[in-house]
Image (cartoon, rainbow, N blue to C red; front, side, top):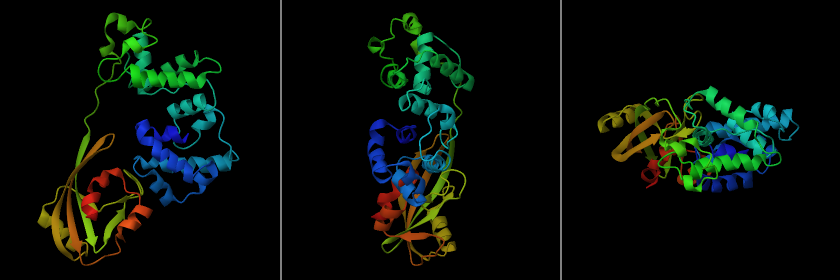
Length: 313
């Protein structure tokens, strides 16, 4: 369960140290259900998509309250937990519970579409459901977890998404219609992606002695409730950024450019310009902490971590 949530859109090698640290501190459902929100997000820091961590805790609380602390043993019950959808339910049910439940993601869809020569649009939910229904009929009894992981590995290591698939290494190469027809590059069929929205931000690296300023994001929306470096929409000039710091009651002493950064979310891109400002005042609209306090207590989204060197220098 934990590994599947962590591995959503993150590479296995990158996840391993986070997974080990997480389980050392939260080794069971009861400890996850009871962990402080701040500590939970600190343990998750660097993995992104922090709503997943919050849903893990909510699901653990549901398991404690509704299932007596025992992990659900069916796909239907798994789907009742926060943060678990069709793919994750299938992965857990087949790998952990040995149930004939497919985990259909982009890799598995690509394998099945190429194997069968199907040219339907894989972005359509109905296509994914049809593939799952078909796979459910051929799961080998007693080897459900192996079958799910085999499909995953074929998609990740052999039937590749970019470039030529490694057909000579594929155990299904003699069955694959597009290989015979030399049309693997045309499958799977996808509708064009919508262009990613781009937003400009001006980020403030506010320092007072050994302390730096952070603030909470709103409780809803992107990165809801997370700590952030103070920022505003748009690209401010240096004089405008200095004037805004004055409006915030920071009594700015000096200002200097602190670099630029780009962060890409699934459907949005932030193009950020930063200024480092030395402040004489520390209004309580911000949380002021030194570096040790920051490292121990505050989880900062990766979007802002490109500015940490400039912040703490």
